[in-house]
Image (tube, rainbow, N blue to C red; front, side, top):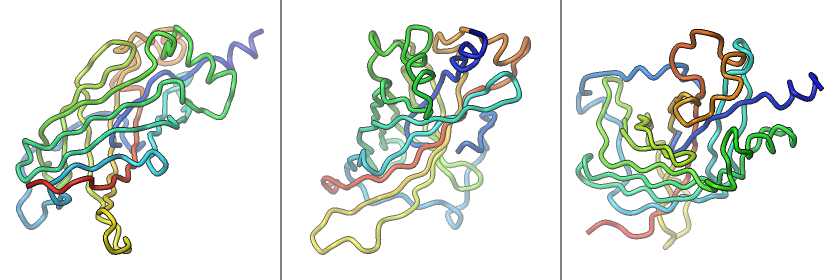
Length: 223
């Protein structure tokens, strides 16, 4: 029974989504503005549709204080709107909560249950954001809203535009790539089961790291 219970002790957390490195253990945002020479570019203004077959939302969650369990969500969809003015850029992402995948079936079923993502009552997670700002190292930050289990928290998303595919066929829409990171606390979204054992008595900072890679096709250039 103890062995099975240890197997089911888990992760809890995500996110989203979207767009984003497991290199993030705390969310300390760089401050200041970058010079124009160091600014990351953005794609041409327009709406970009996330390609679910080439977009991946990964997470790493603290496990028994010193361990880390990694997983992903297999179904991600949404849109990214690039605008001439950074304040007008938007992200709208939806993640199928039941598509959580840690490569262990019993653990995944536990994560889908009422103690964690509660997919029966909350089948989707969402991330909505409007407006971006530049950091001192040239990346972009969006202060968007992440909703899990009906609870909404502001979660900064740090991302970089990786460029456009250089080999698209003539007449095909532009295809953009993004990489993003974020970090959250599972307890902020009502996932508190076993947190004392998982995180220790005095946890500091976020306990779930998020990394997202997205490919998106332009649907229509902005006018």
